[in-house]
Image (cartoon, rainbow, N blue to C red; front, side, top):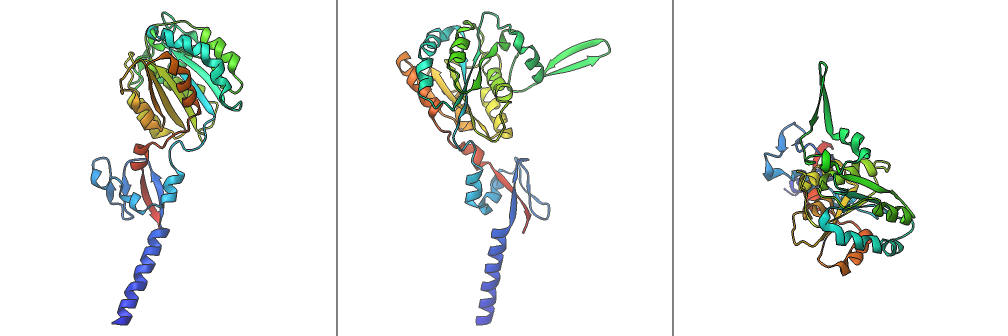
Length: 303
């Protein structure tokens, strides 16, 4: 009897060791299979959605946390629609003092959206084609806007422009850029975020963290979906996070941009707090995006 008990104990230890030594890989498809090929976790089987998380090492999860590390590549994306006039004025007056409080090595750029009266920016003609499909049938050419979170990206809804590149020691370019455009009307907020990620940050690798500081007093009015944009971005990238500085509003509609990407959400209602809040956002380190971590799945490869 003692030998049988000892044998069971030994087999249990060996089994545990094999389980610990098992190899898993990150599964981004939403479908997890057992070694025999049985699907045990999928979007339609929410009960076992995190099945393999029970067997993954905590240090592996920690090493793959979204947006961990210091951020020295930042772009301010600011709403230049008419209702933002006072806040834009404060930003222009305080930018020099804000820059003086961040390290010289920090690369800081500036993009505006909703600027000018009509938003007709020649520099956007080529970039708009990135999200449109050109279809040619015979001698007729038509442009079909792809469905997605961006909304409309033509006319006034194409009004976004990088007025200062993302580089270090950039004070003069930032201030000159902020003064180079005027107040507009429409607010293509999501399209501006898209251009910041896929155009302005395209010169940097996708392994180092980058931050967008979005400054606005309201939401999108060109049909874009900020929350859908953030979810789609996080399904592809782990190097971007978005801080939202919401002014003159108590709405929480844009908080999803921060919570989904591991950024911060700030709400201010007076001009006095603007400079300090913007400085704090630029200097703040990213948080972990809880949803991204809890939905992570792992697929068994081998023992």
